[in-house]
Length: 396
Image 1 (cartoon, rainbow, N blue to C red):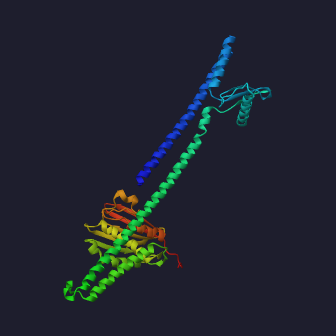
Image 2: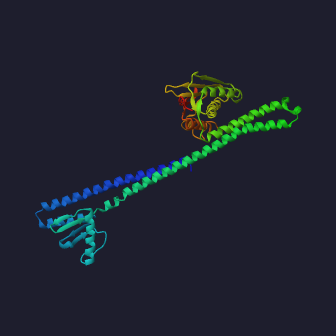
Image 3: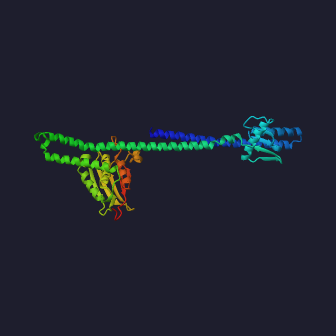
């Protein structure tokens, strides 16, 4: 199920709970209004009886008052001397008060009412037991329903989070497999080509290539295969870190990419600006070189067909952290992907798999304890900034 569909389900569930809470609140208000209206009617009948000089009218007021009380639905039991039940209204069961069984049943019911609500003394040996109004009985279940709704929302949220995490992991593994296949495919294809040339006789080889020249090219492809396998081996396990000079990593990357940029990006110039006394960082040269290479290749993609300048910078910020920065003069990052730029599967390229920046964040944040961000973007280009903590003096 897609993320948008899960979001829709949660939104519907939230709106349903919100609607239920509103109905619950409105029901409580309605109950209080009804109680106020009942008390007003009772007050009016009492005032009528007290103000009337006509005994018949006073009796009529008392009858009306009793009727209002009975219609309220509140269970009422009048117990006289010797616990004799003299009268009862609004009981939750039918009973004959003239029978011993009926008396015993109502007497037991009255005791239960008295446990919850203290009886009202009418005389020294006469008491009125009362229960809760019917509306209160119904409202008693509302908190349980609310708690059930909240629990359901909580459990649904957990399921959604686990599903999305699993989907993200699946996307990451899929992107990783594609990236591995891509990186292995280039040197393997090259090796196949050199193998075909070796099968040709020397006089049929293009340019009269000698076997020692072919052997050097094969050695370079094998070195590339070894580098790729080493990278993916390190990314998948706990990596030992040690004091590392970033200047050496940058110089090595400058030499590696300098020979390939004319082929990968025509009209692109690579510039390097680093501090001479850059502090050592605690890191792994293979993985940090991979992270830097991903940022530079990302910049190359941004400059494809246009040309421009890619600048690698290294310096110490005000907080004492070592900053590795890659700046390009491309068109900047599309606003639609800026917030998800480092998520697996997100790419600014039509044919990209969205794994390079995700791998870079894993290398920098999880393995080296640093951070990476899109520091700036716009028509003048994009700036990616890696921050790494300096190595502790004397640390191994």
